[in-house]
Amino acid sequence: QVQLVESGGGLVQPGGSLRLSCAASGSRFSINAMRWYRQAPGKQREFVAAITSGDDTNYADSVKGRFTISRDNAKNTLYLQMNSLKVEDTGVYYCNAQIVTWKAYESWGQGTQVTVSS
Image (cartoon, rainbow, N blue to C red; front, side):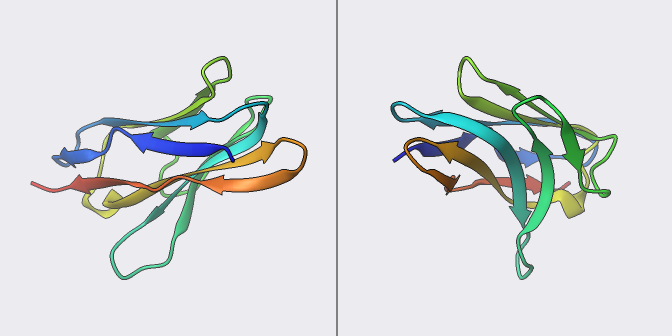
């Protein structure tokens, strides 16, 4: 089973930046699309950004122009560069990936907390 582990969360002031990482580990696998989601306290999990295996990207309107998703296929790692952070960006950020082994399935990370507060 391929595991996803997020890192890079923390506490930052409004207007600040953070870079999240999501590393996939396992054996004999490839990854198609990868996505970031987030969940604020008391709210449902929501889509943030996605990137295909061909590096096509898609963003939620709320983060366009501020967040950048990227991936390093050699390292099986997904990134999310978050700039101009707002209080409303606070939440737990989750990595999601379409894994292909002898079957195809979706994998989720455990999440990393991002808190934007003064």
